[in-house]
Image 1 (tube, rainbow, N blue to C red):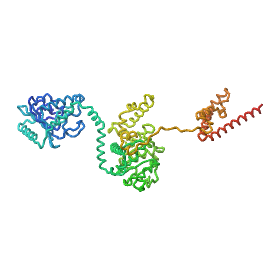
Image 2: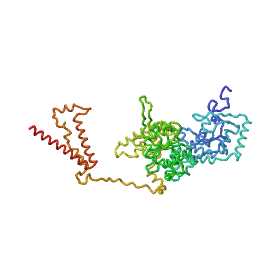
Image 3: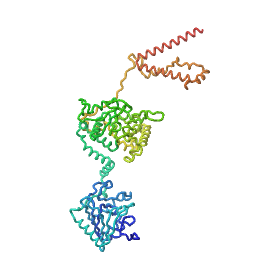
Image 4: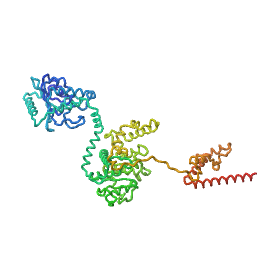
Length: 620
């Protein structure tokens, strides 16, 4: 090996020099160049502008046939006519328009561009320079990019060799000429390259900017939808009875739910009441059954017949989907907390809870609380709670389980309700969406959203604008909702699914509630509840308040004397309050009951007063 790197003909962009330095040194005014590369970038051109703008002619041969056909070359993985470099600094990105325009003019005046027709047919890279007096050649692995030429901050480690033997130089030139002139092997693509460069430097229309922005916002969603659509078409779901009875908005809901389940292993369907969540879920179930998934449906006990009616073993005329032969298992929420018993032939003691591929939870808000089961003194589990059985035995145990949650009201009290249901999708993992959605903690995200909502709710009526709340909620919250939930209202269906509404016959109109009430009694003895309550509140009920008549010098004694921290005066006050409430309770029962109670009280007071008069007379 030579003692000095300057004597080496190797160029690797690191220890053995850079390819760019070789080109700068050898390209002179009037040079004719022949280059083979899989890529061509405007920033590689910019770095060699001083040399390339002086050449007489360049023949550039792309070693890959597929030209970039999107407006975002950084988003494609396939080899292509790469006009831009990846990983550019902000400064270079801002200069892109000017560089592209300058490069296009240079190509128009001095460059021919052809491309190999067949992919993966040509892998070599070659740079041949004829300065009019001598030929200079380097070949190896470097593409015409900043990284390939050694101009990037972290350039590729390439392996290239400078060819100094004149015979080898001539052979390489003949090889290039033969390939360049072979119309069966190569084609002219200069017009395509210029067209793409024009897209980089010509000011785009507002419409193009708008649609490109939409594409990037929903690119991940659209690509996922396309993959799911292809998989959807491979199943026989569209031939099933359940699919054929669905309206368009329900079919879209089914496809959306399947996409979310495949992507995130779960979905929450929170459509408004009356939009057919059960039918939507049945179509999702049939899709996974057709893929040989074992499905468990968990529902409130009162809704069992809503699900068992569609099972294959129900051969009655009440089953509208008998031909679909649904084979899912149905259990009640309460069955999760039972250790023994038989439900429709299913022995809970021997049931293999962890072999279900999909679990559908109807009225999933019943699992909004992550409650713990019964423990002994040492903390050992005696009986699991419903939530624990669902999480540990069905979702976390055994096969990977997907989850479909159905609820028109997934949030009852606060967003902690939603968090506990989402944990059923993530198998209890708080950071499950850290990589896929950039959500590092579900707990912190939803706690922050809850705090924002509470602060908004406490604001004045004038400031309590929904748009203001939406502006304050984090982007992560909306990302989570978009990715995991399907929540549509009747207004949404009316706006976007007019054809379906024509089939349905429109939703029934909701009239403003009317308050209907009657007077307390037909004889008008009690004009109103408010007046009656006011009069009862004024009753002294002295019979139950003897402390009121204790002389001042003795009151301290009764105040200090307490039973369970209550003084006699306080206890009597509570008793009188209870008596007044009891009067109104009697009235709730019936006016007649109230009248009897009041008569008894009057008689009791009358007897008390008569007794007092007799005693006074006896004393005198």
